[in-house]
Each structure stands twice: as structure tokens, then as C-alpha cells.
Length: 124
Image (cartoon, rainbow, N blue to C red; front, side, top):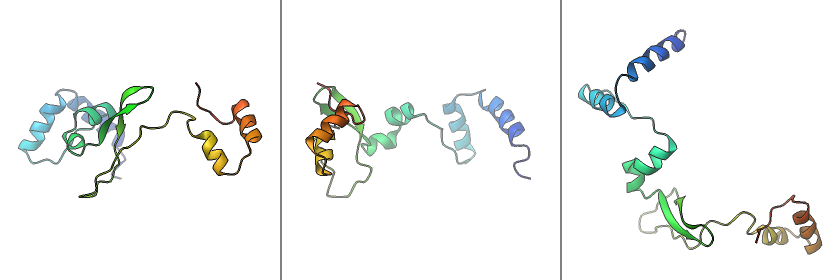
């Protein structure tokens, strides 16, 4: 029964929420001790959320072909043993040959897979 009128209620709330900015609603909710948080899109969360900045969730790395790129940091942070980022993210197909070799593929099989584009290789 709780969700019987969900579409109607959501529609009415949407109309009301459009009458103020997110910041105005958050201030108003705080005045009345209403627990609330803004819904952020990915851009807002990664660029403007203070918790993301504090936790250094996004880091900048030097990439051999793309220059400086932003990447997600390791999601786990152990006190006293911070993650070390020694290499940039691999380029598409950068390690295909090595991985196939580790799994026992012969060079002619690898060449065939690359030629047929069943496996992506690093394009020069």
C-alpha cells in the first residue's frame, strides 16, 4: 500500500523541488534537522565533493601517450601504507601478447588472433 501512489507523490515532489536550488533545499532541510544529501552526477561527485577531495579518490598520472590523466585511486587506504602508483594505466591492447604468451599461446596463434582482430593489440 505504501507505493500505491508513488508516481503521483514523486511527480508532486518533483514540482516542489524545482522551485528552489539544491543549496536552498539543503539549507532548509538543515534548519529543520531533516536528514538529506544532494544527489550528484559523476562530474559533480568527482570534481566538487569535499569527501572525494579529502580522500584523494581521484589522482593525476603522467601517461606516455595521453599526457596528464585523471584516474580513480585505489579505493582502500591503509594507514601507514599508502598506495604507490608506479605506472600509468595500460593502453588498449598494451599487454595482449604477454598475457596470451602466459596462457601458453604460440606466436603463430597470437599473430592469427591479432590479424583477425579477435584480440586487440597495441596499435603503433
